[in-house]
Image (cartoon, rainbow over all chains, first blue to last red):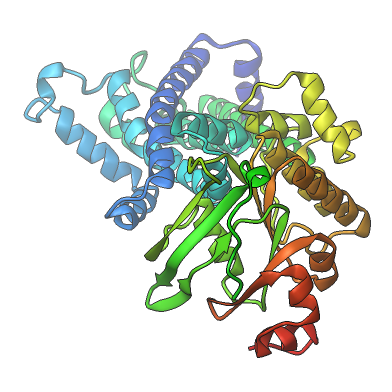
Length: 233
Length: 242
């Protein structure tokens, strides 16, 4: 690999190349939006599954765990079929827009957030259940207590979801189309630029993506360390 | 089996517990069988018996944590028959992931001032650790906090499931003193223990369980000097009761 490509890549980052930062900004926007929606959906799903006893609960949790391993390209294909002109939501004209990419990421991340939330809440519920019954704690207070006491684990869950979203390529490629200045995000741009032989921009995006991944993992470690230090795990 | 005496007028505020043919069967196993007891005396009722006798299940049923599958029970005040506030201290302390004083505040239904919460912590020698994470306390400290949390709810009836098992002597002493104080203030305690010395120190009456059945229910003095049942005698003699 030519050293000049590396130098050029760092030059693009250092000089705040407009194309590079446009792609970076869109990536972050799409991933954060998808993450917020997934948290909004995933926390209640996971918490409800953990706290409530109902017929079919085991089936639901098995299904949720299975959905964690959804292949992104399959999700991309399903969202594509749903949003394509002949699909049930084709009339909305969302295909090849950032919104379509958000939808695909929400489908991918929500099961992850929900399943990890379920694990955290289920452990906490088993630990606190009898105490709450004994103290006659009502459900709203119990839920707020679970959320507060699980805050460090839930932050880790959110960061894991963000890591998955920002590094996803298959689904957003299919539903976004990787259109320049419209739906091109870091992962799809890296794939495209590499295939074109434009290694400098691909490397620059790779460095940024790697840095983001490191930051997220660093945050996860910091959160876990703090939680352990203060006995919150 | 001792027939409880009718309550006298000064016992009017003493919580009483009555069960009639109480039973619990889980997945085909009968864990509690035909439990009929009347606890009408003040002070501390000790529940003794070998492991697996059903002691914890019995108090969990009485405290409402487990629904019995047969029979019925009533908990109330003499002459009033109304339900009464109750609390429970578990064998393994369950503490929230927050500070010591916040654990106390969480259970505080009476909106005590911070000074009152601090006094409650002082009573269990935990005032200096009020801002520490509760889960980082030692086992004895955690159990003392659990007791303080139970008492802050101002119960009339207190269930204790082996609260001093594996604790250091200092913590045992603090817990026993608090239970005695609570007793003097009219709190009825039902206390599970494997420590016969502790049962002698605290108990006003003893319920002896084996294999999910009440084998004996007598006043403490009679139980320790002249147990009626072969199983209780063997238990007190330190033999292995199966």
